[in-house]
Image (cartoon, rainbow, N blue to C red; front, top):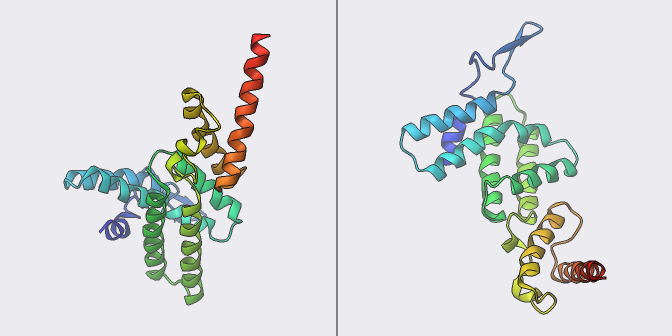
Length: 206
């Protein structure tokens, strides 16, 4: 249902006064996805859909242009997109984010199918969508997406305050691509952080 509403509303802002412009005599609608997301949210709220559902559809509308612009760009561009989404507070877990990208793929493939897109272009969209979803599953959104937890680290870090600090630090490092989300690497990174904290505290007492 979210995909269906996304397909119906993704271009709803085209032609609106705040987005309609002209370049070389041809109409343009730069930013229609942003205005369209707001309009979609208003429509679905008025129809009394649940807030979570409204948020899902408005996210699809807001991001449908970004899908197409990133298809032929390097993977690092897609990683940056995923990192931004992971930190935006929109999703609770990376599986939620991956599911959203599955829906976005369905919307964008349907959108392309309604144009004069060639079969090869449609295949390209589908392949990028599959790659995007696979990458989304590798981008942790919450500390519970890490392949290590507080119990695993309690033997390394006994201070509860420090233990509460280390998981968000590891999460950010994995999101930045500076650390692999693998138990051993995460554990070694935590050990190094604990040593640095101990040394810093020792210097402060001298």
